[in-house]
Amino acid sequence: MYQVKRQCRSEFVPIRNLTYHVQVWGEPAPDKVPLVMVHGWMDVAASYQFVVDAFAHDHYIIAPDWRGYGKTPAGGADNFWFPDYLADLDFLLDHYAPGQPVNLVGHSMGGNVVMLYGGVRPERIRRLVNLEGFGMPATRPAQAPGRFASWMDELKKLHAGEMALKAYDSADGVARRLMKTNPRLGQDKADWLARHWAAETPDGKWAILGDAAHKVTNAQLYRVEEVLEIYKRLTMPVLAVEASDNSLDQWWNGKFTLAEYHERLKVVPQVEVARIEDAGHMMHHDQPADLATLIERFIA
Image 1: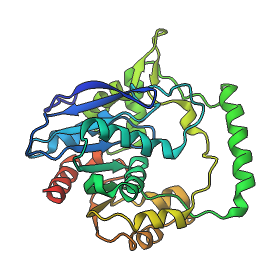
Image 2 (image 1 turned 45 degrees about the vertical axis):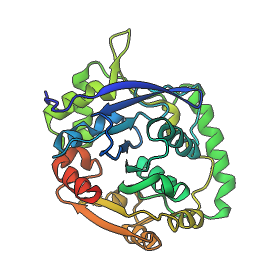
Image 3 (image 1 turned 135 degrees about the horizontal axis):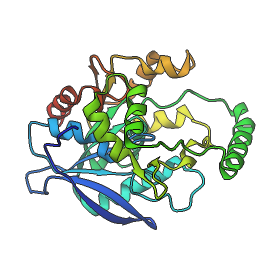
């Protein structure tokens, strides 16, 4: 199994009526800018371990499990609203870095969160790194009735137990699932991740540490015009990192392209686009050393 080089500690922080689980590596110091790393959809904070181990320098790193992921409870929610992630992050920074700008990294869903948060609270961010937080395809107002209907239909399916996440017979089964999703993931890392991405239940099964309610369609349309106005207010330097595999083509079949994403990035005042070779969307698993080098160079 993968051998961890830098041990983390778990902390539990009261945030907005939830007890947030936060993984912390290193210790705060006057000469250290806190490095906050937030994960993506159906992922957990521990997923950054490989990158943390690959850093050449000692950092004070703060990585939360988002609400309804890992060891952070969902709080009884049956669906999740994107603005809550921004508010949760705001409270988290109040706790760990009051009055101090941080370096902020986000992957996928977390990348979308940090791009929006950075535009709303630019004074709190020194450097921002977005790992394939592409955003979503543009929508039209005419889609609103259907979107609300889909949202309500999926809520009924959730409460009927029709959207439950698959349980696995063993941690090995979870590891095989991770490797099937990401062929670049080696057995050692998959075995390690499986025990952080899932947990054993009283009946001996292994359950994914992600609430099924995360699968429910967002009731609100993705409004590109609003997003671009927020992007314009990203006053800090931004590093947008992409993998060599084009995930957008795989996901959207032309409905949203890498070229469209690059066009949106043009409104960001200070942006650098970088690419990780031989990597897919889970670049922090595929090429952690290359990603660590990119991040450290950018925040130096």
